[in-house]
Amino acid sequence: MINKNELKYIQSFVHKKQWAQESVFMVEGPKLMAELLGSDWIIEKIYANVAWADKQTDPSLNIQIVEDFELEKMTQLQKPNQVIALVEKKLYMKPLEFKGKFTLVLDGVQDPGNMGTIIRTADWFGCSQIIISEDSANLYNPKVIQSTMGSFLRVRVASMDIATVMAEANLPIYGALLAGSSLYETKLTSDGFLVIGNESKGIRPEIISMVTQAISIPKFGAAESLNAAVATGIILSHWKSQ
Amino acid sequence: MINKNELKYIQSFVHKKQWAQESVFMVEGPKLMAELLGSDWIIEKIYANVAWADKQTDPSLNIQIVEDFELEKMTQLQKPNQVIALVEKKLYMKPLEFKGKFTLVLDGVQDPGNMGTIIRTADWFGCSQIIISEDSANLYNPKVIQSTMGSFLRVRVASMDIATVMAEANLPIYGALLAGSSLYETKLTSDGFLVIGNESKGIRPEIISMVTQAISIPKFGAAESLNAAVATGIILSHWKSQ
Image 1 (cartoon, rainbow over the protein chains, first blue to last red):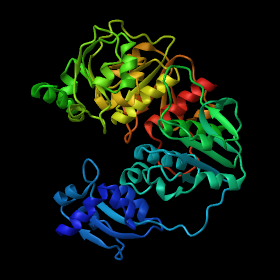
Image 2: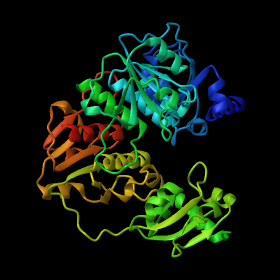
Image 3: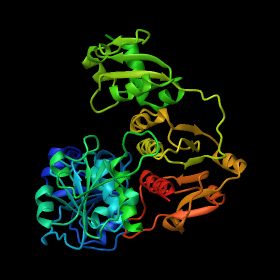
């Protein structure tokens, strides 16, 4: 059983005011939990049904058994999925390094589903760090976390002043733009930045002016644009296949 | 002003029971409307605020002026966007042809956002037809229509018995699978089928057995899978760039 105040607290994670401020974030489902338990993230509290809890062997886990009807009140998924956990927002102590690395840069990507899918796609292609502008979706939005399908555990995502970071790094800056050299004829270096812009407005002019190589995905039909996550996947795939 | 019954009718389009059965589907926003008005789809009814209606020059449009607070009650978007229309589900009279064409095949793609993004991506790469299994998301789901960003007007989407269609066409069948030849080393023909499977279960075994060339997008990191729309984009991009 869960008490009323705790239930209210969990439910409040649907609001930005809550998930943005708290020192913990919410994770759901056995698949994500299995990955979390194998990682070094610190799990503060677990709410789970008996079926899930019975399978755990680590006695140090702080599990509170709840009924399925309670999970139903707590979940942010369409259907509850056995377990909900509160995880400490990780504090990365080591500063990010850019030299020798290929870093994805999100300039105002605002849809949480897109953000999560981009993190998952970066993980697939072995791109291990993403910096995001402060007006981008928040990593700890439960919708972002869920749509990464666990990739937030492997890809480091940092909210930063992307202009300052890129200016200081002095590496190639690729920008995904509607007008640019054809991706198919562009050779991407193994280190540098790839900037993906906002879903409708694209990359901000002040960031465009920093781009050293504008690249565009050739269009053969009539759609006005590509989805931000799809474009990211196509460019990262080209980066790896060349 | 809109009367109570009409308002209820529009609101009912949030339910599958409604949008699946009706002979019309719902479209929102000035951008999609502009594309629709330039197409041969038949618009049965338009609900719009004065700002939008005042800009129209075609006197044959069946526009009912509504207040912004009414649009707020009618919309399926997060914020209403000036205009909502009911459009007749188009009956394609010409049967689909497959010879000489590259056809996308969706085997149980169930997320409406994914489906819409796939249609938009197909449109970008000039892939003009998609056949979908009967358990895939429905094209006329308002969430699918909105996320196509207008591409449903250019890409023909048909719900069919995909196994029968592919068996009869006798063309190459490419399947996006986790185990297959590397996409980067596969030459895709200009006609044939590309099968994309369900978000979690992939392609059904009976369809896999029909695949003449299994292709997989090489993985460089640790994500378990790619989003269906991202995978579609990467493969279509390769198809066009080779």
